[in-house]
Amino acid sequence: MANIIKPVKIIDFIFSVFLLSIFLVSCGGKETNDSQEQVEEIQQVDHSNSTLLTINGEIFSIPSPIQTALLIKELGSNYNKEMLNPPKGSEAYPTKFQKAINLGVYGADMGYVTIYDQTQDALLYLKYIKGIAEDLGVMGAFDKTLLERFEKNMGNQDSILILVSDAYRASDSYLKNQERNDIGVLILVGGFVESLHFAIQAAEQKNDPELIKRIGEQKSSLENVIKLLSPYYQKEEFKEITDLLIDLAEDFDAVEYVYIYEKPTTDVATKTTTINSRTEVKISDEQFKTIASSVKKLRSKIIS
Image (cartoon, rainbow, N blue to C red; front, side, top):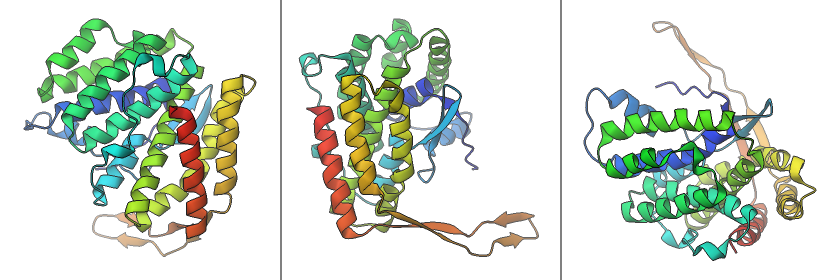
């Protein structure tokens, strides 16, 4: 199936993690013929690509935490609950800044546990995410009835597919009437850092070239994340986290992208051409260790 990436609004990206997590928790059973194509479209995420976000008319490329979790599982890494941020009491994150950025962290964690079919853990994270989202006032995208329908239809695949569609429409309508980009950016940053943390933890346990490449590819994504935060730099909490991300970007400066050209091949019968050229990411062991150390410091600051 061809993967078509379209620019989306930031709220769609944020809730895509939330909704896909619910979907994965709910859809562990049988599939009907009528919904087969829809199921594949939702579950078949191309982990080699990023999501394009449109914010204030500018397009940013940011990887989805779901993509990273899928890659980690595909490469044979075992489920590791220890690397997640465990749900804490509401007093753990008293400010809106802390709630928003950790909502992104927990969204990535929930995506990870559902990718690994850890239903009970996923339900725990779902409950906690809902609590934080309500505190932030971003649950306005989903009315109480819609959320109750999600919970009641856990396990009913066809119903969940319909509810996911309803929820996307609700989130789009909500954004048209709300200006919450500062909160949205923080949620995105939390998810980005957590998914990078996943990749580094997995790479430390399983030194797979594909994982190392995925980490190296975050060089350009990190630049986009910093740009997203820049309008809020004068705010103290934003400044502190942005400076840590800038430090991380300096660590990534040593990562090299090498383009390797290979002649494309054409299938005359099907009239299709396959592009064989590729980009290799060069990152030394020492560079990896430096990046890993900075990510741990950054994540510790976020979740503490």
